[in-house]
Image (tube, rainbow, N blue to C red):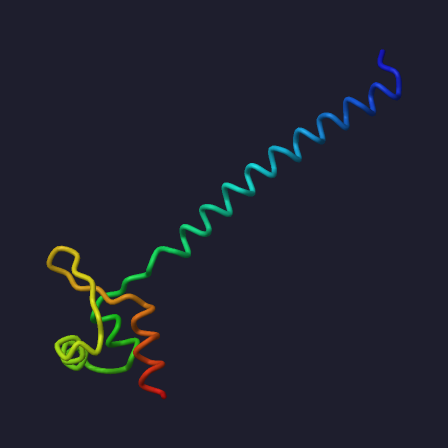
Length: 93
């Protein structure tokens, strides 16, 4: 049978080990969250038009006039949510 001091040391050692594991897990989660934040959300031109409350034709006019930047993925065009936010900010100034 272990003495009370030995039990205490064993428990403290196990707790220390658990704390170290939690630190590693927390660091991994932080890295994943930072990566998620760095990924830009892209939306379709139709969704952008609905978001702005304008027609699809008007969205394409804004793209043609280079007032809105797009990203091409294959044949599809997508607009970054940040680009819409920039457009709205400039339009309200």
